[in-house]
Each structure stands twice: as C-alpha cells, then as structure tokens.
Image 1 (cartoon, rainbow, N blue to C red):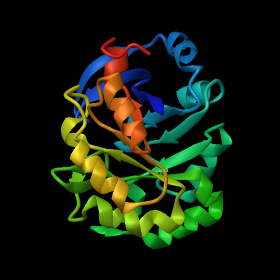
Image 2 (image 1 turned 90 degrees about the horizontal axis):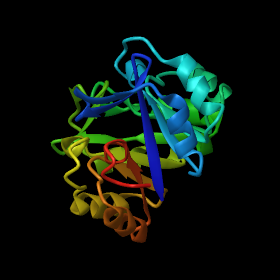
Image 3 (image 1 turned 180 degrees about the vertical axis):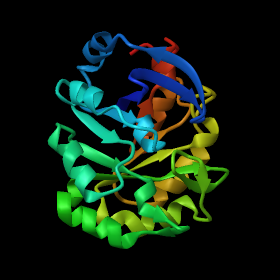
Length: 224
C-alpha cells in the first residue's frame, strides 16, 4: 500500500533531503488534500515539533479533519498523544520518546500503550549508518533497528522505518534492509526513504510491506 506523506514546517508543506536541506515548499493545502483524499491513510509529520522548534498544530487540525491521518512529530508524552488523537489523528507515530539515553524506554512505551491503546500507536524506528537515530535524526544511538523493534513490539500496532541515508534522494530503497526488517517483526511494517517507482512499491507490497512516499510525488516523478 502506498501512503502519501505530508511534512509540515513553518506553516508550509515541505520536502527535506535526509532531514536537513529543504528542497521543496508548498502552501496550496487544498490541492494536496483533494489529491490525497482517495488514500486509506496519509502520513502527517510535524517537523517543527520533531525538532523542538514550535509546532504546526493548527495545520494538523486542517488535515486531520479532512484526511485519515497517522500523525507524528514531537509526540513525547501521553498527554501530547491524547491531544493529537483528540484532533482527529487515527494513530500516533512515536520515535524519540521510545529511545532515551541509548536504550529503549519500555516504561514509557507501556504507559503510552495503556493510555491510548496499543492499536493507536505506531513506533518509528529510523536508521542512519545502521544505527537508530532520534531527536529529528540529529542524535545517533548505539542501537540496531531490529533490536529496538523487538523490544517495542508488545506496545505498538506496527512500525514505521525510515532509511535516512537515502531519504529524499529518489535513488531507491535498499531491499536488503527490508528483508532484515520483515524478519524482525510479525507486526505491520511501513518503510520510507528514497522510494521512487511504482515497481518498488509493488515489490514491497509483495513482501507485505507498506510504503511512504513524499519527494517522488511532489516532484512529479511518481504519478499517483
């Protein structure tokens, strides 16, 4: 399944390369809402909240009121998760709060699952150079992706994996990584980071993996 991505920064829809350089910016929100309305789920990420530099809460409400969204970015407490679900998110995506001081924060994961329901939690496990990264991809942990997934499995309904090394580059997604991740968990798995072609999306779907696509859609490289 293809999941379109909407990343918000400074009141605009943006596309970043590897989480750092802004490559594209849009403010025609109605166009993208109408274009993505046919999809069963849309991924909505508040990059400002993820980077601890404010938030785009009003814009989040605009999108969650019109589209079926899984929402992430800066969700570091049960209170924030409840608030985001309260404005219409179907599920929350949580990453940095699950990894603290180089370890999986199982206590918080358990608390969150109990508070909002495990079925409404997606664990984001993002990797750069083979290690899990947090805090807006600025902090590299010593943890490997598979071990984090296995520890978080009891507390979430699925995983979102972003391969930061290829994110935004439109050079394809490394399929060898997918095989490792698919073997690490029986839960639903969604991947992002460089997917460019319909063939990749089809190949991933045959492996039982969903795909988040951003840059390839916004540049017109992938016509959906």
